[in-house]
Image (cartoon, rainbow, N blue to C red; front, side, top):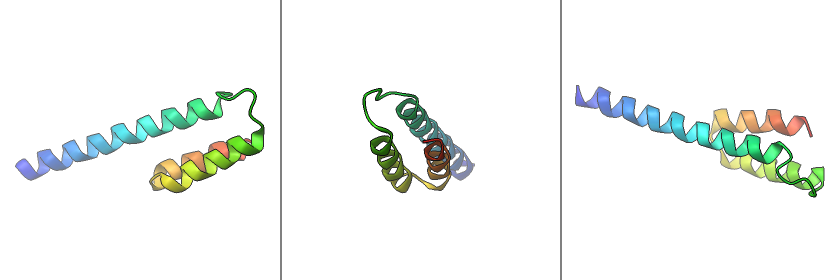
Length: 67
């Protein structure tokens, strides 16, 4: 039973981290840098997408397409 509890806790922690990453990405993409030009924001989102895990990276690239 301990394995399943630790596995569930690990998955919950990963989900929590993913939500934090997505929240950061959304804040960055929602005009967090009003004076920055779009190419700099797009570059930053691209780098974040490469550093993120697969699911979060996909979300980053979806946001990046808007720019």
